[in-house]
Length: 65
Ligand SMILES: [Zn+2]
Image 1 (cartoon, rainbow, N blue to C red):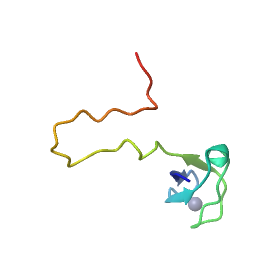
Image 2: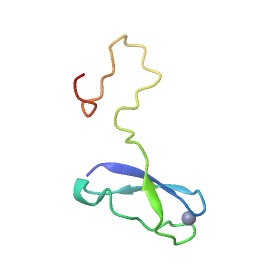
Image 3: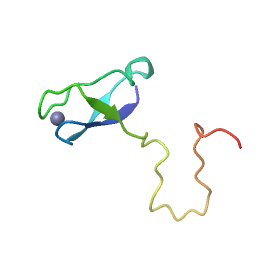
Image 4: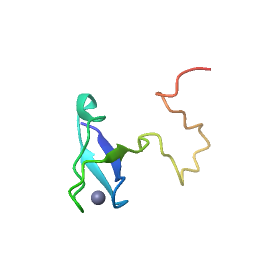
């Protein structure tokens, strides 16, 4: 399962959860304050930094233009 990042809208805490695709958009409980007003952050799958390979890092989920 992929890891999704969430940010609590109440206290601003960021946390990540190992979650299935089906559940990724459901509210997740903030480990810091217990609020379930969390929003999912952008996936980190496509985050490619520090790679000097010269290859274009394309995100498969962005689709074609
Ligand atoms: Zn919180």
